[in-house]
Image (tube, rainbow, N blue to C red):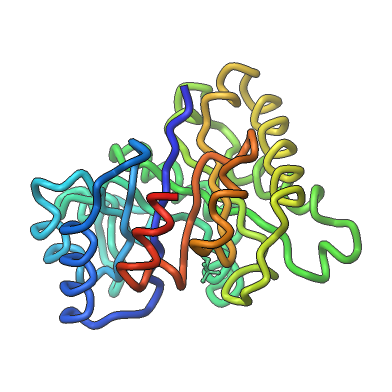
Length: 249
Ligand code: 13P
């Protein structure tokens, strides 16, 4: 059975005081009306504090990135075991901002996914096309490569532990959401590709989130689509009110 997962990606926003305030607002008002998994992904520097603050709450903790080595001389990087040790269950891998600004390739992301899984973290693997790719009918081709190369070498059992996030780059932070029909079309395609990489039952069990300008006023319609199993929320996860309105869609 698929799990519905809504995650908040805080990106490089909030200082520690703001993070604490946001978490207090969330945990004091979160009723989990929909019995879904809710995850917050603060910047690395706040993970320990947020983890402590979330004790006793059903809200889960995720990181926004991870380095694909166990340990070593990698100044400035964070290993999967370090994330586990501060209470992370999830980690975002391959966000479009990392692909774009830090030139992370599908092959490098495949390594991150391997290390995350080996260490018991659930990766949220992001895929999605840029505007020019959509406009030149490359959407499916781009996503197919991101899935095939990023997920290469994983067994069906491993794939079941990966969450996919479809985030069309043109919808991120732009206020321009993919229509529920556009999103559903790509989600169905992703599920079909996942079935090719494993089998139909495995593909059917994998959570596929939509991300890109998810807001309280469009979440219900998006979540109503058969292949949309959650959301990866950026801007609207930075205010307790709007994130709570989304998780209680
Ligand atoms: P926005 O919700 O701000 O568009 O960001 C989406 C996103 O990138 C989440 O990872």
